Length: 195
Image 1 (cartoon, rainbow, N blue to C red):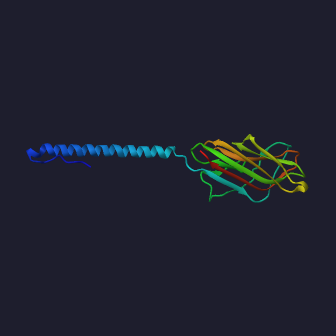
Image 2 (cartoon, rainbow, N blue to C red; image 1 turned 120 degrees about the horizontal axis):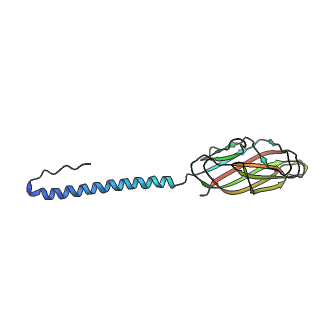
Image 3 (cartoon, rainbow, N blue to C red; image 1 turned 60 degrees about the vertical axis):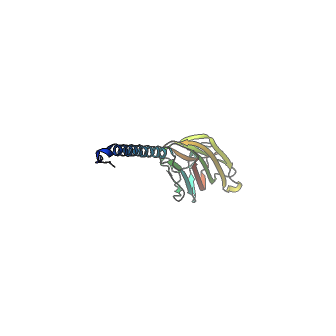
């Protein structure tokens, strides 16, 4: 908004100049404030982490081929991303589609809970680990026994880690005792950001 120069009689010109100078100063300050406010909001938007969460499930049986006892392999069973609850996490890609991928440009600290129901021979132990970008995280390892008589048993792990943009966290499994293939009845991978 521009303020015209005053066209006042000579005796009123000083008053007119004072009014217009003060109005110009006010408008200049308002423009500076608007610019500072817009910049502050922009910086806040850039610094505020986006929500991030994901849920991957599979409810149908699948087989994981085991070549060596005690050696972890990618589960790599196609699973379903629950799009009603997932946000900013997608399904991981080959060579292991049993995982979640950071689809944002932000680095976040994430909590993961992974579980599967499986069997791999009578009374054999089965294992579960998470991997970050297909590098196994040994500290995430958990093992359990499949039931006697070939029943399904459950193994579960929980872990917390930092995910960079495009990082993938996937599920890996093992037959701890022999080379009997692992049959997985169902699996779940849940993740959410905590920072």
